[in-house]
Length: 373
Ligand SMILES: [Zn+2]
Image 1 (spheres, protein in one colour):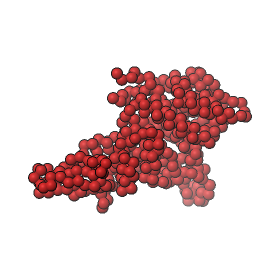
Image 2: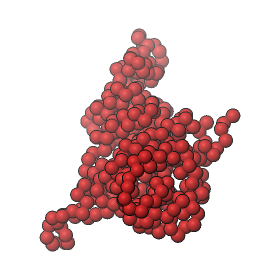
Image 3: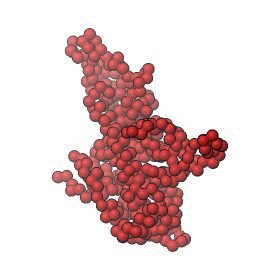
């Protein structure tokens, strides 16, 4: 059984950092980066630079300036990294990482694969959603109230999008990016993320995210999404990937109604199972007096293989809360928010480093746990 303590127990971050840097997966990234043998200025060891990148996320530090200062002043952190890189070295290193994104992706793939080996439940039930990442820039059309129109935007990749209300904060427009994420509903760990400008609709990225999850070697069985993702294309796309959609239906003219369930004089028929290969659901007369006693309905958006009336659907849809919790954790514990870089490429690197810190920390904790007997 999955042990939640394995992933959620907090522990000393500086002492963990050297364990992370020594793990096979991160050591592999360091080796790959060393193999590039970039030349030039005074070189810091790649291990120290990767260590500072992880420290930035582990201490939720928004800027490279403050990361460099913390590593320089924090004795055990400096010892874990092996050196205290200057802020300029960190800027140059971040540029290198942006141009070598495939290396970072390969490292994330290997961390995810090792986690899957330790947590067999990881990646079976997926929840997909998007969250706001406000830009480090101003997107107002006018420079000042009643003033002249803005001609130059400091972050040309950012755009206006909509976010929903959380807690006491009102929903509404915001300027920046959206983090689209596929999260494991059983372990709460991220499976795949992507950062896009805020004006793109979330539904555009759900199936590509599901493909990214499968590309990482997972076989998601169910995918929970809110009503923002409700469409026939999404239902059919999930089924085509052999993944059961668990999507809340928008209250529109073509939403599922009680009349979608067959009925007779004995009452509404009850769900009696699904045939996954033939993509049909079985419904049965409540008294069994009708002839035939049951019928098969072809699965579609209004009549999915996991019907919304079932306990299983409600349980899986509740699992969607994992994605909201994980957004909060990434933003507040791993420094995903506030964004202090401009441009899509830099925002993507920032998110990738947060995810790397999150997953490699979880991996280190599953390794520290005794194996189940
Ligand atoms: Zn009947």
